Length: 185
Length: 185
DNA sequence: CCCTTAACTTGTCAGTGACAAGATTGCGCG
DNA sequence: CGCGCAATCTTGTCACTGACAAGTTAAGGG
Image (cartoon, rainbow over all chains, first blue to last red; front, side, top):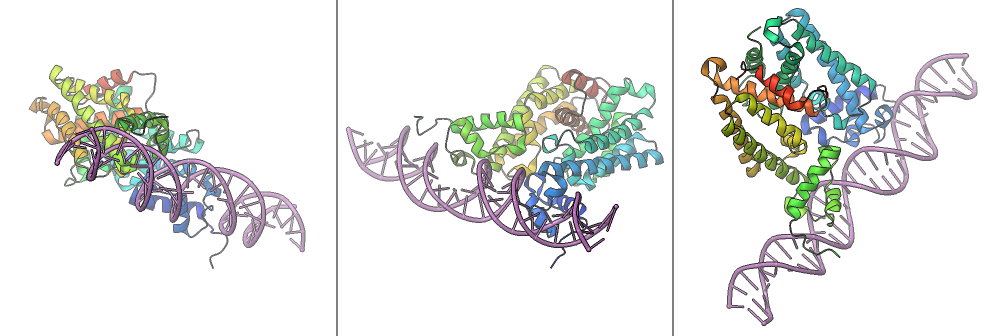
């Protein structure tokens, strides 16, 4: 007989959600299935997330936080924009479930402060990497930032949706693609 | 009393789906709601699409066909890669519902031949635009193609998910971003 | 030791996707 | 002209889902 109190239901449900989404995509996960996986009654998770959207919002926030950490780490280590882009792509591939939920605002509670803050942090980390590029290469800095984000985000999305040939290594191809944007810095 | 046979249910349901997805996102559309909008019983649409996934697959195929047409048209008119990219973005913004479904393979019947063929056609149109670029600019042609697709797809996705500032004009900003990839050709 | 409150369960309701079986209609073919 | 067949649509049903309401259990501060 399992104990009445799970102990760390919130974390367990989030982990189960990652598994379920990785297997079947975010569209087909159900709160009830997650509850079953974790071994808890069908309304258990509701207490922690309020909503299905609440669950996915929490997942998205966690994802942005993880991304921000990863970006800041490679920024501290290399200072290279290309490697920052590779980190972005690596995150998207390795944390596919998080990544898919992060950019699906129709599944979120748009006003969630934790989500907004985490998103902000990740955006700043990415923008900081573009700052490091010389002025002559980037032209307008804001446009350069949008271009940088676009190319790595697009690559990650296309890779994850199976639109790029799978015989390449994602990171290696991403490195060559990112290098095409701003010379090879 | 409406007639027993609708006449063009397939087209009507697809159109209703576009409206519904534009309003509420692809996650919350229900076959039953579409049936209601069109004025037909809840199982009517099933006959034409078999599945919910079948409906979305048909929508995606229609989207790829429209995109291929648009790309081929501007390719015939300008031959400029930048304008091809702008066309890609314009399509994504103007046909948001189609675009969202097109790149969500977890909602499709992956083996649908019509979808594969339409996707093929759009891919070829895009690749053709990159061919036109001089060899010295592109380096490896395959990598250049991936980079081109990535940057316009990423921009379109970020714009549609509300991650880019809305005070810009999408097409104008997209033009500047695309121009950053291969000089300004 | 109590009692407040967080954590979880049980029960229920409307809405959904899928399927089966029946009703209606248009159309080809004799 | 009319008969029958197949496509189109309807009605009925089932298991599953998200949301909510109300009850149960346990933990921890006073």
